[in-house]
Image (cartoon, rainbow, N blue to C red; front, top):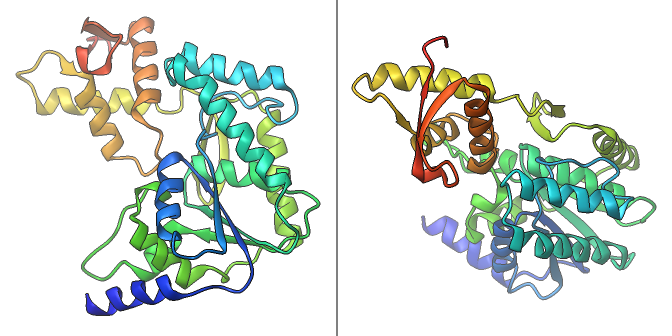
Length: 296
């Protein structure tokens, strides 16, 4: 414990050469990294709060009407509050604009993990950085935690960078900040993958087998049904399962941070389809329960 504390204190005193621009995905990741780097005056953080793994992306980066369509879709599917949608869109556009003004001499560090939201964001950012001469370093927080934090007795499970404390991010920065310089070919390949994602009609993107995949929105439906079957068997005295417990159980078995709102949306679709019966007010996740119909 003493060694780790000494390492963290040492980082606080370090001043890396040159200015560094750090890009994160998600509000929590941005806040944690700002805290982690707060004592290093030459480092700036740009955070993208809209996680692009869920929702339509067709021509999202080129057509303002398509961007508007994305947020309308998220609101209509109860994946974002109407009062938050405009703020999230404005924040995203502000962050995108900041990319254009990055000085050529600044090093760029993109923080990501092994998950759909951050890997999709990585590809969007690299598309926006096309033509810039800056060195771009990739910091994979999931891989760094596996390499440096896991022991034979302790295994860490971080689905998102935003789940890590500022002290952990500070350590990861020391260990990995210049280990993974992206080549020109790598940057172009990843940016081109964004073009493929934004040309797709899919509304769900996942990270699997070290690749980003655009999949059908029904991707998790079978898992929802199978988990419900399992819980019905375990809780034979409960006719209806609280929806919040079912979805919490599913999230506990997933590495991919799909989020409760998307699974809630899919569960309600399965209710409308007749796969589940429900009781209670389905407007709020905590207020309704479900059971599989016998035919299932």
